[in-house]
Length: 190
Image 1 (cartoon, rainbow, N blue to C red):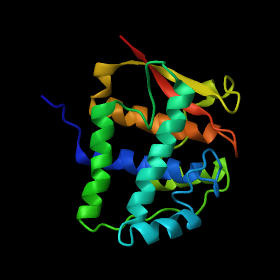
Image 2: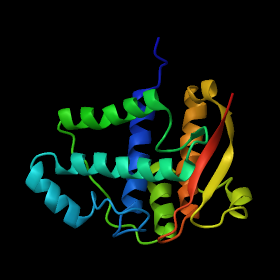
Image 3: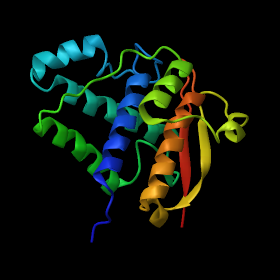
């Protein structure tokens, strides 16, 4: 039996992933080099997928972010913005497909030039702030991981808890700097 997660929550997770994926591009904060959401990347994708280049770019950028996350986390049992568990990740990505099938336009922000600009965007689009991150800021060395806490896998499925986790994970990306990614995560408990 599948656990219920509201569509609004799944769409919000997708939107936050897209915003962080855009922030990580080479023409933004340069955390990875997928170029899927840059002008050059979109130009190339428009030749391959004339009607769905933004969707293809979004999927590639999210996958690039997930790969970087997997490399950073290694074999730790962890929850991240780009790794919430196979079932939940599939449901989130399904929202991208549903948007495309509904011909809902996918708009990407312009390049994001600083963590402060990212924080402002997060505040505007999702009412996210870095409140509650003060305690972890002192333990972060740029280019590394930051543990935001621990959670049992079964508790992730509570909608309120899921929203809190996703919001904190997203806000913690503002701890990163240009070219130096900090990967936020929650340690999974048994």
